[in-house]
Image (cartoon, rainbow over all chains, first blue to last red; front, top):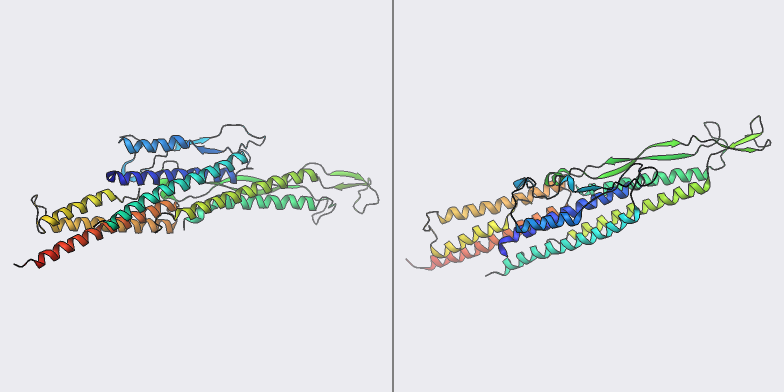
Length: 131
Length: 146
Length: 102
């Protein structure tokens, strides 16, 4: 519906923030594949995406929402550190895992980009054609 | 421009793994170096990796409460392996000691090859990460494309 | 996200559009038509500044997410297009009035 155009676009933008955050974590894991003691990090993606879905339907007054300065749903608690002891040097990054996540994340990103760009173009076209 | 920070993490990975490759290549090249400018046989070297935070731009950090998560890597030092040199009895060797033994580098070629392979694989993984980011950036220009 | 609210702009401009069909000078509630127009233009102007700011942020490295900047630019573009649409309607209305002989 027209009335929720901003909400939808902003939700997509927030989702993209989440995807980018996940990408930073994956990048960091890959850079530290061989760093002694380094534990791999990730976010609970489904949880983060579905919580941003809730924000579309229900107006929450919640300490997590900081008003106009931050519409992000991401909290430091969303970052999960893999607790596995890993290899003898303490590193628990699994290269195959990370490569898989990298691909998944890339596809996720492209998908949401498609959604938001079509939404924006739709509005743009609608205005241009309005008489 | 903020775009460099997207690549900084894996760029640091490339740099670190490359240094690791160089060090182990050097070990292999010097497997029989019984003398060095510093005196004595070549001693096996290895790199020490350490995680290093990368600045990710504070606008995003303001929007989300996750803080700066980008972590790169750096080689903090190149250390020498303190394990004992290999001893080979050869009194005719120019570097033989008074007891007739020659000291050879404490390098095992198989172990070095394994290190080289791992470093290579990690290097490639960082390349993949960079390519992935590059593609995502390219796709972002869908927004506003007429 | 970027502070640009397309829905708000649309509502403002729609109000003006409606009012321009009734009476170009004032409406029943007493708010003058020209002040409504001024407000709407201000809002659109704010959005333009906001989008310029988001480009600045990106160039200076403060913002590292490209999508945020591009979405902001696109929203500013949309709000501007909306304004141009209404401007067109206002111009038509004005011209109609001018054609009406007194």
